[in-house]
Image (cartoon, rainbow over all chains, first blue to last red):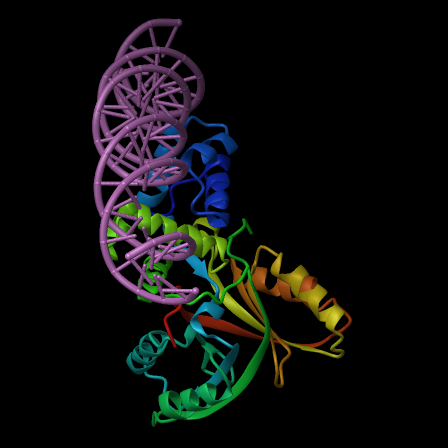
Length: 156
Length: 156
DNA sequence: GTGGTGGCAGGAGTATATTCGGAGAAAATT
DNA sequence: AATTTTCTCCGAATATACTCCTGCCACCAC
């Protein structure tokens, strides 16, 4: 619940380790931060209970799912009602091709990051799942040549 | 190494479970896909060895790191030499504020997804870490109002 | 049929995770 | 300064999971 308990150097070290490798045995985590396994376990449990450690996810090779390349849609809407936008985003992020949806300020309203098999797939996605919606006024597509992601949050 | 061994329904079920929760004990995964723990363990090992299951990462609450909001930079470069771009992306994704960098086709060349403390932080990031570079001709900033991400790859 | 292969279940042994109680240090209170 | 409270740690005991091995069955090729 409350994310604002003060974290010390050891907590941040644990968080960094688990962001890099969620499967590292507690015993080894403990060794890396110079704690006994039980003390380390208590800290991790506390971090989970307080909501700071939210979840852990395995990453798979998209190729195993037939993903050929990634793309982005830059979308403009004609209305900006909060409810409509929220519903649209939730719906879209549920599509198997959608990796993320971002609502932003500026010329474009929404950016969708996509994973598709091929060009035909991208085309049908654009026309059948997106353009169809009345409140979308414009979609621009871009091909993703490269995507680098940092999976660990470092202190700012 | 080779990601192209054919996966059956059970493999995909395992992958989906672990993408949703990398920490689920093997025993429970096995129960969910109707396998014995040993058989399930063998499959997971095979998926790891073949490179399909790449890694697992814990997700933390950015607030614990003092993140106030997210933003995006839309960046234009004056040159597009592969080496320069690659170096730039690697350098940038190493910054603690950068969540991802995307190289795309279209008007903008690169999109950087950022996490910052506040406006001053965003400003100094833009001017000191980005604009300084000679080969960057233009940066547009957008504020991220909402970001939804799917952490499980579903069959296309 | 026969031999070979691959995936599965089950069990034994080992390693790890989890829980609990108590010790010790630091901070707060009197 | 002494006492109380709080907090975090460690170590031992228990529970649980992992790992490896064996044998079984089904499928395929010959």
